[in-house]
Image (cartoon, rainbow, N blue to C red):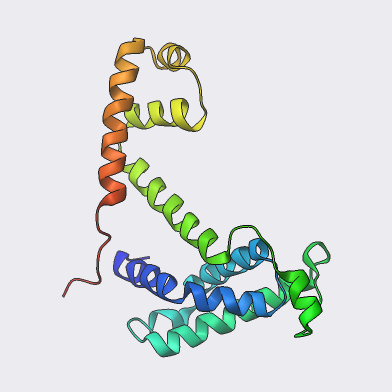
Length: 180
């Protein structure tokens, strides 16, 4: 897929995430299940041939995305593991509330994680391996040095530099839109 289309879908997802989360929750899903439904709907949306024809058309694309989200949420609700009553009864709606993270918070966290993954991919091979082993797999610096055939001091320097690069990448402004 071309980067202009993906940038547009990213902006669309950010603009629509609250509405999509409400659609999924209105179908009777708990926040985590609603988050999964929104993610699945976005994935489905990317594969739709008509999605490309809706680039920079926020109203029709938002409607299509909401429809896909509603269908995904209904299908998820029908699964035995996430089955919940579908009703506007205040007692049932109260049961659906959850004190955990909201769907919007979960979507924002997923977007941050996706951005971090992209930033991590921009690192060279050795610094990326250091970050993966030291920070993600939480191995001690000595073990990382042994695995990579480096000195512990070199691992520490590479980790420091990689953290600085990741911070710069994560705080950089995302692309605003397609270049003309």
